[in-house]
Image (spheres, helix red, strand yellow):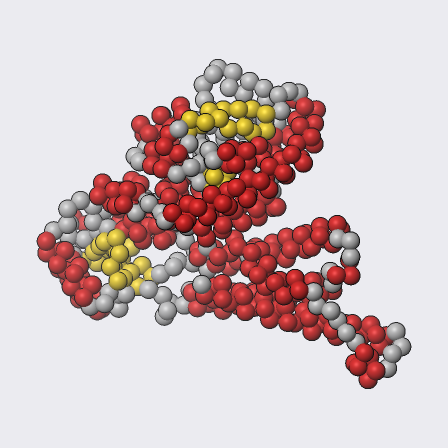
Length: 463
């Protein structure tokens, strides 16, 4: 919310600056034509179209990739987002300017000024935000209770973030064998009996409980004492979700799974209604785009590798119901000549040149909009997998079938955050993203995923 408000103020100031620049530029042109300055100031008029006032909102949409908390705190990713936003905006404006019947209604000088001002002001605001975010005096100071597998997994995820979202001080563990040891560069400071003293000594603001299995009564009482002092106490799975936007499926206990994916997974009926409405609207638009591009894509596929243009496969939908998806063919004929299902890999040799382009731009997914209209799929959800792969994965990966609690989607949280998977370990990571979406899904999250997918299409970074 802080990021959003700051970006909106910056873009609103950019809009005002662009209007002022437009006025001064028009005044200068009038004086250059021979009109006296005092006369020019009296007669000059600029008509600001209504749509110009919604440019700050459009700018926020162009910056949608930059609102993920870890992206926003990273200078490199922030600069990339601010560099891409005006380029995409200029591309969109050029397209509208080309097809518009009244070019005078689209002030080029004002649009250019807005994009420049918005980029500079947003960059300045983000510099302030990153400076505050990474200031050690303002960051949380965290102790991890438990130096076992769960605690070490959490610290491993923490170390991959740059800059870190908080200051990790170290571990607390009651196992004498771990005393004085370090894991991933963080020491085991003491046992839980001295937790309150350590909180005072290190000015701790948060304690993360990463104890696997049953917790001792004395330790539990200490945790309660810590909470009574106003220290934030968080369970490891919650902190892991905060750090990674994934669910740590290898460190979940049965009661947590039941609470998260049975009790909490239910969503309000209004969300289901609005989501279905968004699916229908998106399905109609996508189907129209599909029909428009079909002759050109079909011609390119046939020209390179002949027929067929499409391929169809059975997939599992919500509740393990089987349905058929239809996609443009992106691989050579008989890509699975032995009849065995094979997961697509990055730089897969079976992919044709036309197919590589279709995958990069996600155009191969266009025929699936019909499945969205039929209600078998949604715009946003886990990737629809083949029954054979689901049967194999659920033998090796805990909670894999939990992803069938919702409709599969054309795009999803896992798709925009992770690439192709070729191993079981990578499939586990992708499942963690899927389960995070299922647990936290909202209409705002769905809309954000759709917008980020559109950005992926425009930048041709799909796989």
